[in-house]
Amino acid sequence: MSRTHSDRLNAKKVHRGFAAEVRRAANRLGSAVPPLSVIPAEVLGAEPLPFEMPAFLDCAFGYPGNLRFVQFGFSYRTREFAYCDGGDDIPSSSESVWKWFLNHSLISPHLPEERYPTLHGIFPADSLTFNNPITAETSEWISQENPLLAHHCLLLDRQELKAYVARREQNLLFLALTQPEDKGLHTLYIDELLMSSGMENYEEPRDEDLEALVRRFFDVQLHRRLRKLRR
Image (tube, rainbow, N blue to C red; front, side, top):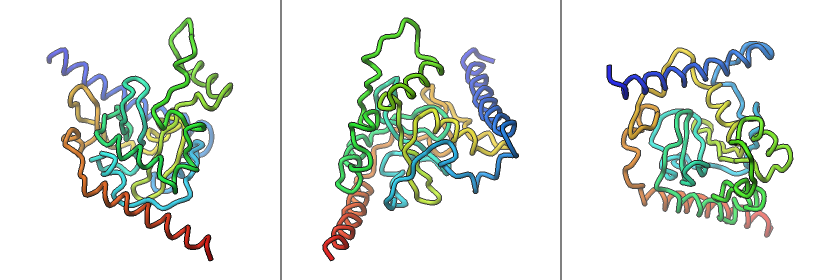
């Protein structure tokens, strides 16, 4: 077995072990973890957004996978727009669609840059200086001392067509919690990225027709709300 193959196999085992440990920890805190189909995203603090989501929003943001939950936002490590369904952050070529989404008149009041700077690719925590690397403890300290320094992402429920905003660490725990125990969902290693089935062609160019559909969907929803306000 080559060193590369061995490293990848170990990474997959660590990933499965992390998901299993999250479930065990949840069970120790109370009753058994409910089935995936009934676990609410709010269980770890995710805040629902009060507008409809199109069924093709995930594709417009570049996600080609099949899992129910996926998060979108900027990677702290690469500063690139990316998505994650429980494996690694996968870079997406749909940053322009994402920025249009955040600045749309229907959406921008709920996801303003001054409250959620990291959603817009701005990381205020860069201005902080630590003698040691950021750990789970310092990350929690940052969140408690100044919520604006927390790393937020958008969590999308592809089944219920609902979107939430939550801190990245909440999303990662939630994604681990909602993965079936009996399935190794993240088994692919492409370009040194651990990903789920269906994401093999993640570098394919985005579908511009889908972008147009997303723009029209939110424009129509906005016009409907404006008409109601005028009545």
